[in-house]
Length: 255
Ligand SMILES: [Zn+2]
Ligand SMILES: [Zn+2]
Ligand SMILES: [Zn+2]
Image 1: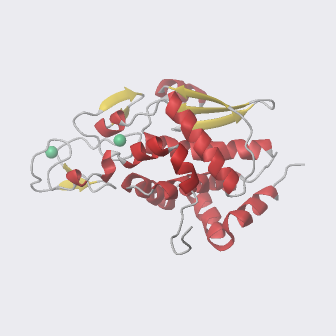
Image 2: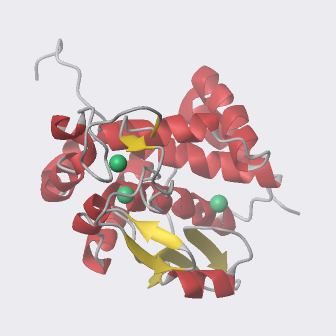
Image 3: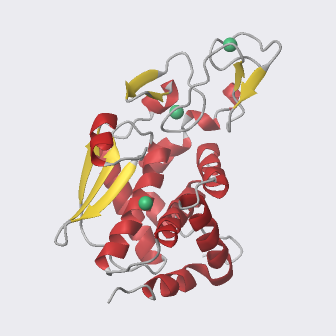
């Protein structure tokens, strides 16, 4: 092994999951084709006022400003409604995650988490649900949900997500299972911030424009639970690394 060449902690996993990572990397958000001054929705050159999204797409100010539930970018003309007033852009439709893809992602995330010191994560049941089903299960606007009935663990995720969005949601929910399994009882925002740190960890292994945007969204999230929680846990992580964060989390053992 060449000692001068830095190796990604993900590199040993890449071989097994090569196709999946390549798929994520091929997602349209990394294509230079879209960096033009024409409107992302109608394709005409931008004249006068316009909006931009996190991916530098431009949109004439005369169009409705709709965002894709999966990538949070603007909807293009091929956008479809997936229920509950939620939309999915053309590109996310093309990189739609199947149950088989999601199971591959889980294998990859589990292996990576084990490698960074989180240990073994218990088995759980994965289910992909529609926007309406998700609304029935939760009050908020969530893309994923982890639960436990004390004996078994469950993860429910929205069925419409693209690969990059899905890998981030799974990375988050799996760390809820990790906390359930260890009977940890951290304050809500620490618990959510810790799970978001997992999404950050996985996104930073993928290194695409889409994953960079997802990291930026974590950092800028205005939510007092998720956003503040993430910033607190991330600051601690920057000082103490995963070993420090894990130790801190294990201090929240419930009686
Ligand atoms: Zn337009
Ligand atoms: Zn999208
Ligand atoms: Zn959560």
